[in-house]
Image (cartoon, rainbow, N blue to C red; front, side, top):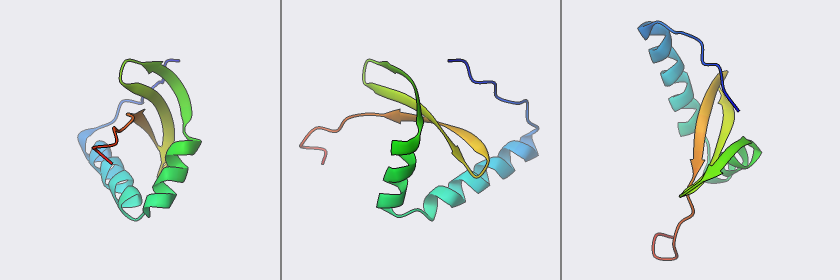
Length: 72
């Protein structure tokens, strides 16, 4: 699945990054988990599953990487 990312000026990218960063920082662990669980799967490969979600109006690529017991 190809995702079309709009061309953005540097100031627009910085604004989008700030909005995404702030939105994610304000999420609790459970809210973040719900966002990731609701993300649209776009592929799977070595090391995890890729998904796409919308955060503050910006498409965000998510890579789900399973943790080992030691990492938990």
